[in-house]
Structure formats: structure tokens, C-alpha cells
Figure 1 (cartoon, each protein chain N blue to C red):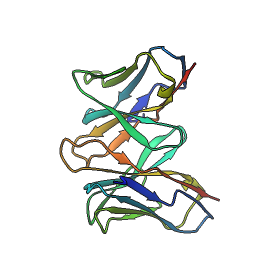
Figure 2: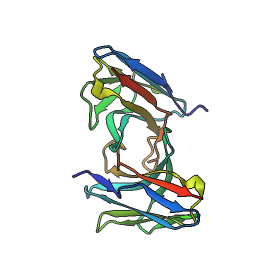
Figure 3: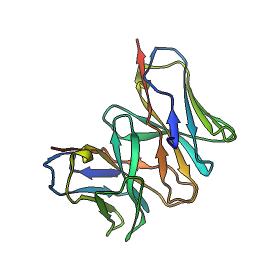
Figure 4: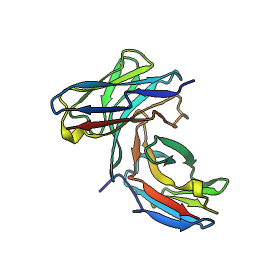
Length: 111
Length: 114
């Protein structure tokens, strides 16, 4: 079983749609959680951290459920520029800041 | 600030050849990482370093060596390249602070081994 698993993609949605990505992690020692965004053939960049209480950044909302070992990302009012691959990432406690990446979910927003 | 830079951007090798990928960061970060990314696999950690002069193995270290002689540089070596090492290689760095979890990535090196 992969340590971090994400919804298989791709997600094809029209502009303005709301889309949700789900992610599960297997290691209960996971300490920190993130969503990274990766544009085609580019490097990953941090989109947002995920906090236990849930957090929002504009059109993006991230949720964490430690009991179920589940992370989600909600994108409201999708824009064409949101088209990218979204990577669910966890940081294991006390292991040199190593990040464990999910395989990514591709999002394509169409006009 | 250039952030994290990687050299070269592209390379084609023949099986058995060796090469070194260079990663440099100008943010005075303590931690540096080498990943490879293959289709459908996500990023997998090859080796990492928590400070100058130290290195450690990641998830997929076989066939690679690393060195961190200077804080700002992290080198990844392929001793005898194999087709299975065809991949995109990303270097990343982060600050050593306890609350600094964000990793900053270089633009990647696309390596093909024939």
C-alpha cells in the first residue's frame, strides 16, 4: 500500500465548477500536511499547508481528519489557470523533514 | 535570489556512463533533497542532507551517490547509468527551523538513459 494515496485523475471540469480532491495517508506518525501544485513539466510549488482545524485561502479550502488519516482540497469557482496536477504531501515526524508525495491528481478546467 | 537551480536541464546518457547533477541554493537552507519523478509514481526521495557534510538515504537510493561538501550545493552522482534511471530529477531545499516545512524546488533535470 502506498504511504500517500490520491484520487485517480484526471478531473475534467468546466470553469466555475467546484472540485474536491481526496487523499489518505497510512503512517500515523505523519506530522504535517500540504497540498503542492505542479504545472506541466515544471517543479512542484507549495499551494497550502493543511491544519487540523481546516484552513482556507481564497477559493481553496483544505481539511484534515487525523482520526481517519484523510486530507482533502476543495477548489471553488474553478479557473482555467487552476489546471495543474495537485500533489498531496505529508511530513513524517522527526525524519529530517522528509516529504512523502502522493502520485498526484490532474485537474483540467475547460472553458 | 535565484532560489534553487539545477544543472544541467537536460541530458542524454548511454548505459554505463556516469554523470553528476548539481543543485545549488542561495537561501542558506540547511536541508537539501534529491527526488526523482516518474509517470504515475509521484516524487520519490533518493537522498537527502540535513546539513553540510551529512547525507542520508531516502526511499530509492540504489545506483546514486550524493555529496554535500558546501552548504549551498548538493550533488547527485550516477555511477553507471541504467535505462531505469531515465526520469526527471528534482532538487529541493528548506530551512532548518522547526516550523519551516515548505520545500523549495529547482526546475528539474530531464535525464534519458539509452
